[in-house]
Image 1 (cartoon, rainbow, N blue to C red):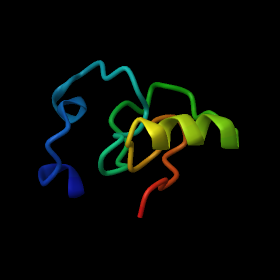
Image 2 (cartoon, one colour):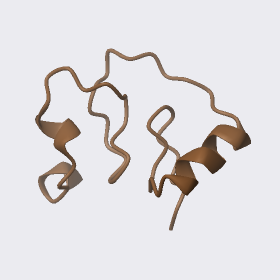
Image 3 (tube, rainbow, N blue to C red):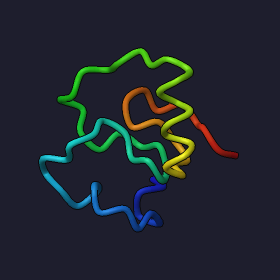
Image 4 (tube, rainbow, N blue to C red):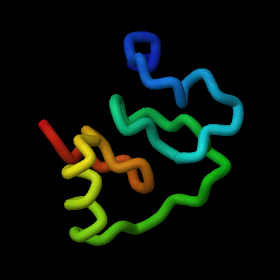
Length: 62
């Protein structure tokens, strides 16, 4: 599990506000419905320096 190496606090929350961790891409809250994202939403996430999309889990930055 990559989350043990990840420093993102969403892994430690029982009610994380996002489905996927923006740092490692692991599911942190499976109760949030999977969302299909647009390229524009992914561009905003890249600008925020997220490695992974918090809605669909796609790797944004390599």
